[in-house]
Length: 278
Ligand SMILES: Nc1nc2c(ncn2[C@@H]2O[C@H](COP(=O)(O)OP(=O)(O)O)[C@@H](O)[C@H]2O)c(=O)[nH]1
Ligand SMILES: [Mg+2]
Image (tube, rainbow, N blue to C red):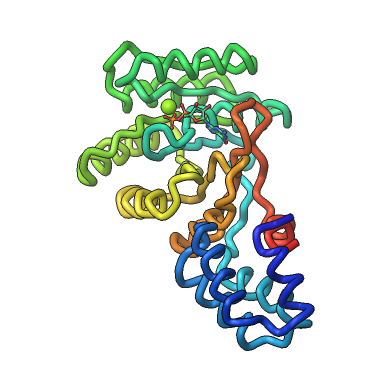
């Protein structure tokens, strides 16, 4: 049963008691749906006739979801370039590999770039993924300039007729200006060769409101075009996907639902909301 399910069936049978409403509020907050949204939903429970409640909640949630396309913006007839950014450990490398696999399966010629050059293990991790899914990986020397590796990757992708270039970046978050400088430079260097079509922010779904704060820092530093929320498998905090969209006004494009290569799903809000309310 979804997050709200047992409460909604209770509220649709009886008038909600104050105690039930308090418990429902607590569950909403614990789900990481965000304080504002939780209060709005509680208000609906207090105001709406029980038979209208489910429709009213669904409509309210939809009203604050992004209306931007959730599809990856593919460059018509040319190379599509995607930068994957986010804090360390959120699932950038894994998500980049999963996305490469998804695109490869749909018939695209994909090139990966290991631009997290500061950690040898991170480069090896992407290379291992590349071998497993059968996708080429561009790497630089250890501690080489990430922008230089990206330049090499972009040049190779363009010259050799790849359809999609996916770039796994370092997740360092020392200071905002440092991050801005590094990601800004990476982007400028790539754009000497080819346009950047997507900058996807990877958010760890188990980090709650802290993850949203990180996303805000990134979105002030680089212009993000969409999000991937990872690790929502086995999490009771299913509200995080909705909270991030509302807070950041960015379309959630994919969700990570496990550690395997096939565990990346295109995000579709309708079944997601039905599941929460079921
Ligand atoms: N359960 C689960 N684990 C994930 C998911 N995505 C990534 N991970 C795990 O999270 C850890 C960090 O992932 P990684 O891609 O190395 O993060 P990065 O530092 O941002 O590149 C690894 O152990 C991954 O297997 C997911 O959707 N679900
Ligand atoms: Mg990584």
